[in-house]
Each structure stands twice: as C-alpha cells, then as structure tokens.
Image (cartoon, rainbow, N blue to C red; front, side, top):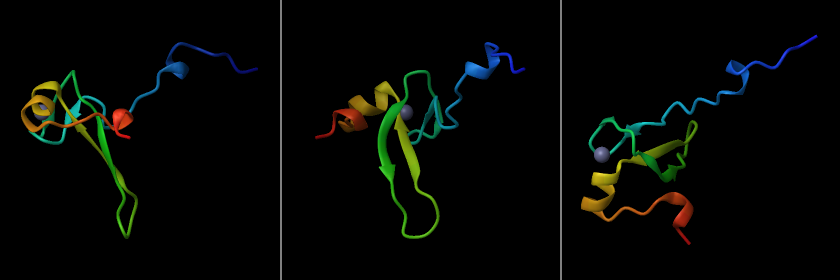
Length: 64
Ligand SMILES: [Zn+2]
C-alpha cells in the first residue's frame, strides 16, 4: 500500500532558479521562452527580475 509523503509531492523543475541571460542562479527566475529545436528536445529559457527589466523580457505566460 503506497503512502503519500511530503517528498512525493515536491515537484522539482530542473531549470527553476536559473537565469539563462546572466547564466547564474536566481530566486526570481521565470519562464521566458520555450525553444523548439529541429533535432533533439527543446529547452526552456528562464530570466531573473533584473535581466527582465534590463532587456525588456516578458514572461512566457503573458505573451499573447
Ligand atoms: Zn539574470
């Protein structure tokens, strides 16, 4: 009988907390873009708050 523990419910996003623009960790990183590649799996680009401000990046979910 399987028991649901707190650990089972933790979802870890591999790229969460990483800013692809300054190439470092960040606590404010949000998804900016999902890059689809011709070959191989696509990947996600995240940017932190300062990089979004400096570069005028818009979070992926708010892109029309
Ligand atoms: Zn950044």
